[in-house]
Amino acid sequence: MSTVVAEFLNKLFLFLPTLIVRGIILVIIFSIWPKLVDVLITTYKKMLRRKNVDPLLESFTSSMLKTLLYIILFFLIIGIAGVKATSLITVLGTAGLAVGLALQGSLANLAGGLLILFFKPFTKDEYIVAGGGIEGTVDKIQILYTILTTVDNRVIIVPNSQLANNAITNVSRNPERRLDMVFSVSYDTSTDKVKEILNRIANEHPAVLKDKPVNIRMSVQNASSLDFIFRVWVKKENYWDAKFDFTEIVKAEFDANNIEIPYQKIDIYRK
Image (cartoon, rainbow, N blue to C red; front, side, top):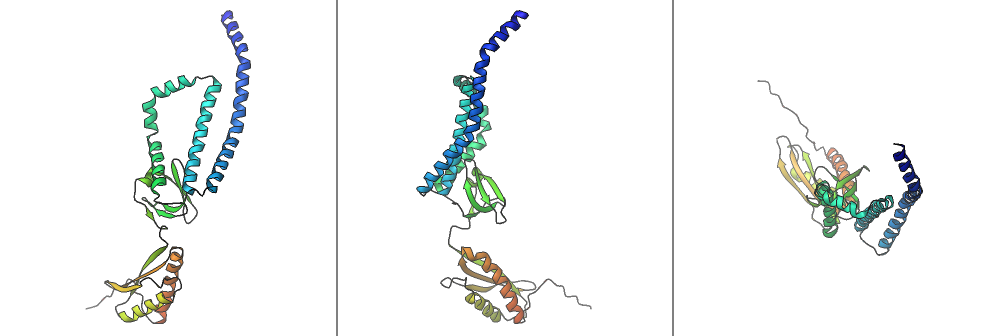
């Protein structure tokens, strides 16, 4: 037993200097690698910006480059630790099916990101609406995920495959938007009077595009109200301000002209 222990100690003492050197090298690599990655990514982004490359392509390829750099780090660590790359590849090849199944979703997201960059259904700073109540302004696209920012400054991280394989509404792509609103009045109100007031409001508002049609018509005769559609065209950046303006202005004008805005009520007749 003592001979075995002595043999083990002799081998340990022989291998200890190599182990210490490898440990020091690993510590150095771990400490400088993140800084090296940051420098390379920053330099790469500056180069792309000088060439006016699409910002989404910049974020996607930067994410891919960062991933590749850390894969290189992984193989460096394996090599320094003394594990032969051929042995590692053999193990990975044997477990190839399991690895493929585990990475199936990630590969789908990678392919989805490439499809988005190629077909460009949206670009940076465009507002999109996707399925499942997901909507926001496009911030960046990474190797597996697209990052959106909501109007209340929340961050939504969406898998690329979800955006590539489902319908997307791009709200910001066209410079002009039609604003559709509905205003209800009581049955006692003159139709012509309502149309005259709404047309005047539309024509006087500075955000309304005068070269586009204004459509104000009675659309529905409800049980207790007459509903008028109010359709005007505005610049996309003026959409929400115009919507809120019309809501307030129409209420004030209806009050000034004694036009009743109906609310739910029940008439009871006693026989």
